[in-house]
Length: 174
Image (tube, rainbow, N blue to C red):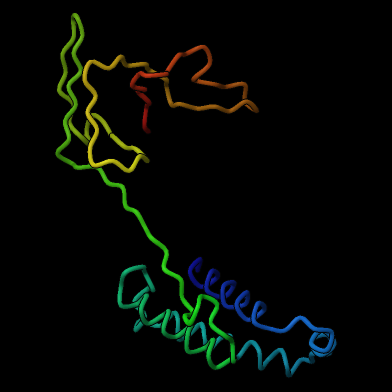
């Protein structure tokens, strides 16, 4: 259902963006009758049926479905008489970065009276938004911060009065 809603909204926005904005068009659009609306919705339905078809395979990035989707959109832009907006192309490359954690990562916690080897997924989760090949924490002081919640509207701040600079922050993940 959400996918259909997103498709309808996206296609409606596309059509709205492609319609002219001069005074003549505003006057014409103001006089749309019931038959005009039926035609518009029928055309929208055709586009949605094509884009939502099994042939497009969900339209996920880096798949054949994405290639079919972009080719279809370019074809429709040309049919509408639109000029390319990125040099001679209707498309614009968008670099995508994936951040992932190696499931074989290990974490050893050692203290004066405590030693533990933690297993990824069962005992701990490690993540970062830094785009680095790997990270190692050696002899890093650990600061426990609960769930890491900062919610002033609830008078709740797990970081209040805690110095985390240069330390490893341990957060509960539910």
